[in-house]
Amino acid sequence: MASKHPNVYMDVSAWPPNWWEPSLVRNIDGARCRTKTMWGTNGGIQRALEYFDEMDKLPIRDESKRLILRENAMMVYNLLALAQNRGSLFQKLEAASFFCCL
Image 1: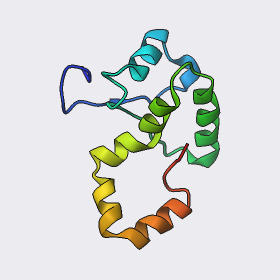
Image 2: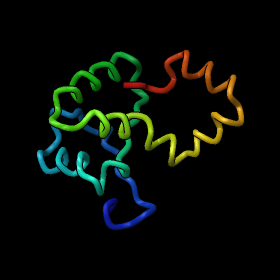
Image 3: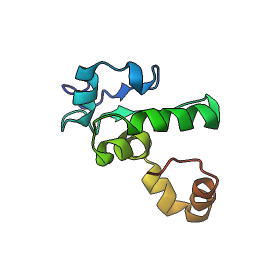
Image 4: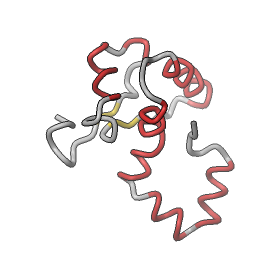
């Protein structure tokens, strides 16, 4: 669905990366879904760190990881514009590890 429709995105946060089907891994690393996939958590920093370790083991490009973990959400929620308009607040949030950087 996400690869066919411009306003449909995929969320891959329901299952840990080591449970993902090989076809999903190929799709999120491909040109069509790389910019349409996002991940988020309310499980705390420990779960996020475990997720990042598992994701590093996947055979996908670093660019895809960066898009999935950070940049796609920033684009969808227009956080880049917010960062430009409210620079100091955004810098404080980034300094507090609010957004994940690879």
